[in-house]
Length: 377
Image: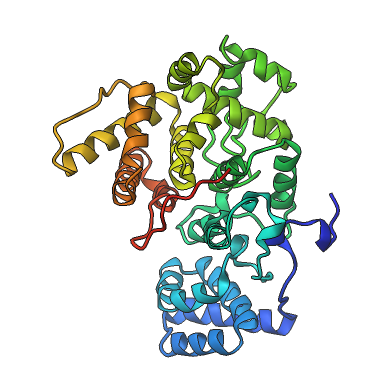
């Protein structure tokens, strides 16, 4: 990969760089706050600086918050909450780990935004992967989600998605998942002989190789019994993501394929929702929890929605993501208010399974002032 700015994804292009003296003074300030517990009067000063010199101040503030999180998470959270609105007003999208980078984002250079109008492009520029990383960096002890500022992981994964001819919707979904899973950093909580990387477990590779429905597709990627999660390249990881989602959504795919008279992929079903946010939430549910447990969360959320709305109907809770579950999910999200409630309920059930991952699930909740459903081609 070229290390030149021209060859990098827009989110990673160099911007404001802090000199050594500024970095040292900022770190000392973080140490002082952590030691004394005092931030009195600091927030107004930072808010003023963010308005007067937004680029320089944003770089300093990101460094300060990053340093403070490593020393006193509670103080960092408190300080960030006081200046979040001012920071959000200028940041657009912030790259991973609060590093000093250019906050300008040219959506024309990102295939995710091809074919979208200006309002849609701006929305997703603010909603894309960096927002996920910003959320995770504030989570206590969740070090596996840190992707360092000089890491080539982001531009490489970005370019490998292009090489894999990923659709714009796949770009959004897979980059979301890649960030949720901490990039290529091995998961310290891994079980088994080899560490989990990018959310891919060694047991998952084994099961996909043994499954008669998936083993040929896995073999076509060059994955065999010697393959480990860390040893995969990004083309293989992207292939595994596709195969895994196809397998998790197989019952609904089978029914749709029969009706349409042609093979239907998980991506086809996700695109059929005609809402990128709902598609990403559904895909991440299956990727994190697997087919049966992910289906259980979706079915519980649907029935909880019906109960919340005072509707008598219910769907079967059988841990099988079939046509009934898919159809109910799709019908509910057609109304923006119903869509928000359903995604909130889905996040609630997912949090019940993995309480420590609540920020991951909260990302897939929608804001109160939510846009209309947005279709990504």
